[in-house]
Image (tube, rainbow, N blue to C red; front, side, top):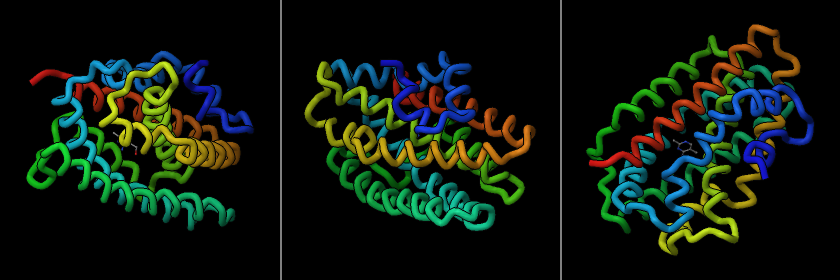
Length: 230
Ligand SMILES: Cc1ncc(CO)c(N)n1
């Protein structure tokens, strides 16, 4: 099965399906990274996993205000109340996620406080911040939001496929983002983004595509950071 088809298209086509084709190579780099494949194949280096865990906690803490900013834009710019419900659901699951990170970090002896963000993480967080301003259109922000969630969904669901040899102690991590509910949630975000883009000007659509590409690049950088040695 081709990667982008599962969480990408939603049911209504739209620009996102086109972008997934156009940027397929980069999308695959982000969703089939050697780090994820090493989890799937059972050969993952646990120190890489621990580095990813510590860094991702820092990222998720930054991701919360970003999602809050998307919620605010939705409230201002859309007349569809279900957008708010779906984004609010995302915020609720981030609340669970923070607790999960704390539990998981203590299980692996990964310190969470005083853990400095590495360069690719800083770059990614700065990019998130650049999307939080009120000058950034809802279509652009919701597209980035969808892409950020979709990369994790697509990546971790690979580790749950029947042929995977994911280590038992990493199954919880893979299920967190690879599960069916999270996939559905990503599909909802994709539909919202497509619908919003359908009403946007050509200039905004172009900016949203750019944000999508940036997310993919930042995700690759983030995986590389976890995977590298030291
Ligand atoms: C780097 C990164 N991208 C996406 C997600 C999904 O929430 C995450 N937790 N971390």
